[in-house]
Structure formats: C-alpha cells, structure tokens
Image (cartoon, rainbow, N blue to C red; front, side):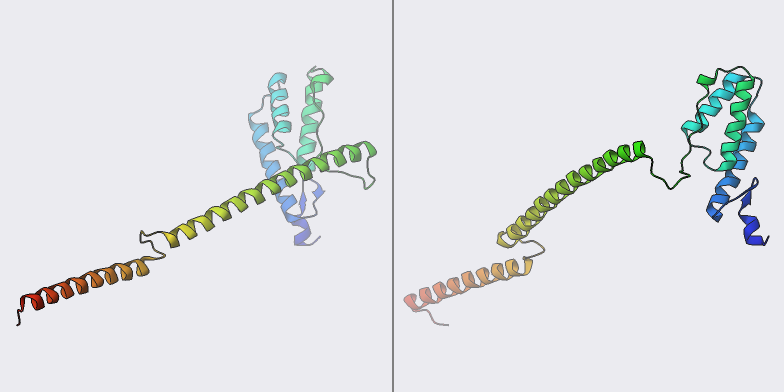
Length: 186
C-alpha cells in the first residue's frame, strides 16, 4: 500500500477521499475524549451522551458508527430497555434501487421547495421592480429640482450667476438712464 492509500485508512476502513478520512480521524479524537470523561458505571449518563451524539450528528463515518454501536451494547448490558435506546441514523444510502415509499415522500417534498422558490422569486421580482421605480423617480426629481445637487450643481450655479449678471446689467442701464435724464456726464 502506498503512502496516499495509507492516508485514506482510518480505524480499519479505507475511505474514498482524504476529507472523509480526516473526518474519521477527527471522530477518533472525539471518541478518545468521550472515553476519557465518560463513566460507563452510570448508564443514564451514557444514554444522555449517546442521545446527544445522535441529535448533534457528532459521528458520521463508520468509525463513529462503530463507537455508537459499542455504546448501544453497553447500554443494553447495563439494563436500559431496548425501546429507550434509539437506533443509529444513517445519513447515506447503500442501494441504487429506489424505495417506492421514499420516492413518493421525496416527490411531495421536492415539490414544496419549488413552490417556495417560485413564491420567493415572484416576491423578489416585485421588490426589484418597485426599487427600480423609486430610483427612477429620485433621478427625475433630482434633475427637475431647483436645489443644486451633485447631478445638477453646475447648471444651477451657472443659472444663478447668469441671473446676477442680468440684474447687474439692468441696474447699470437704469443708472445710465438716470445720468442721461439728469444730464450728468463724467
């Protein structure tokens, strides 16, 4: 066995990927930690740890599943009723044949996310449309407004200066007119 294949072997199992092998190594460390702190003389504590491990999906590889089986056997040996010991859930399938009861369930479950996605998509399109209209309204208002903004400040300032220049010319003309009527010359 070459070095790459040796890296894939953990706990007597040969894994298909390095990531799966690393997960199994992490599970071995978790098992060692649990073994160090767990008192098998107290079956209620063992049952509690067992249930927590199942609920939190602590063990996913065959290495962890074997440890859960060991805990099951220990619980049964300590007199815990079989109905209180939950079965170990498997998170993978082992057959390519479709299970008819499962496929019916999955087809109904598969339709629900599509309907949910369709509803979210329609909501998203409506919200985006409304936001687009709001943006267009803001742009139109900024161009039509008399208050200078970053968009039209140059035009507003030019118009203001042009207005002042017009007023100044009108005053100068009024002064000249007044000078002519009074016959004042320079």
